[in-house]
Length: 143
Image 1 (cartoon, rainbow, N blue to C red):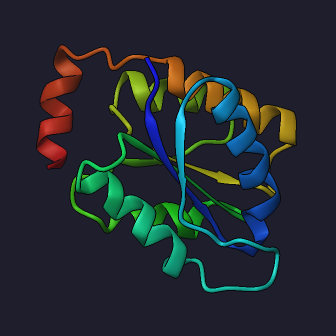
Image 2 (image 1 turned 180 degrees about the horizontal axis):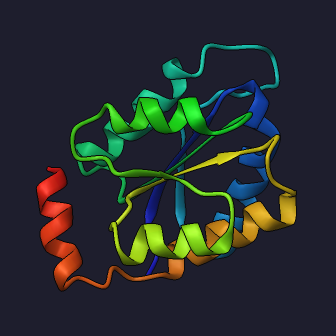
């Protein structure tokens, strides 16, 4: 089922953002790019917050945010009520972010991951369903 996915990055995540957009389009998803649109230095909250807000408003089902480490981007996204952004660095963290935490936003660090692994993380994160059950109660407690 195609999703509408918000994507954004700072300058340090720009290269992977562009590659992930191609992957998402190839998988049949609609992508809304909130920038940045070059590798010129920028302040990441200006681009990450609008992507997270699009998820919170229901305009996009999920968001993918990128930076050098992904830490700051996850922090910004998680300041938006209704967003559960997971910083993932391997396939297991991506799977559990969806399966146990119903993550609706993914943060990746371009300087922390090889490109192929980043793309595999995105694919697994998108394909993994929320397990519900006891995890639903815990997710409700977050809100």
